[in-house]
Image (cartoon, rainbow over all chains, first blue to last red; front, side):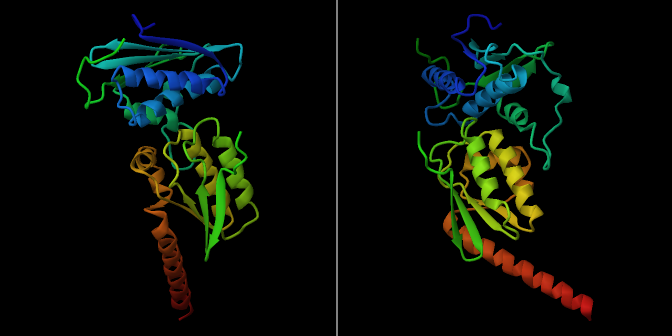
Length: 143
Length: 137
């Protein structure tokens, strides 16, 4: 669990419940100057991919299971954690995306856009680190 | 909830232009409607030259890429082809990161894309004709 998160929300495992939390997370990231308003494309993509994976692959869309999103500041990086209540998976078993198969691209995109990506040993917590956008003054943040 | 179809198909010469009408996003919630709409349209249309126009699209997730691969498979099995146009910079980058720029020919603005697609088809036809002629000689 991230220490002293500035954002912590849970939602049931349904794609319908996800956009509200996603939108709120992006608003908070913009308010705290982690992303530029209007330039949230990659942050939105990574959050959505991670949340969709937690809902569909982790919790198998079981509404009784929850997905938790936490964000905490670590210097110039925002530590984002997505927890699911599934049985976990081995990220090393996810093949890199090719030009034929339909899966595996979400993780590839997260790895590209985020500063760092890590899975816990159980495989049901994805951690990713977002670097603060360059156009905002470092350390500038709102309550 | 809007009943607007996610893709509007219009025939322009030999090219079928599918303009993605989802004005804001192609996210996890509306992607299956997008895929179903496209797959239903391309079914039983052999030799379809489909140009998917992304000029209204500002966001897409990896789920859209999976749908595009399914659409491409369905069209190419029928002897046709799928090409894309008018992707903004962020979207082009997603295709590049995931190597799908090697699968899809991506044109620039929609107004030029139809002409370029038609020219490409003519060049292919000429090439095939030339190859047949060479074999016959």
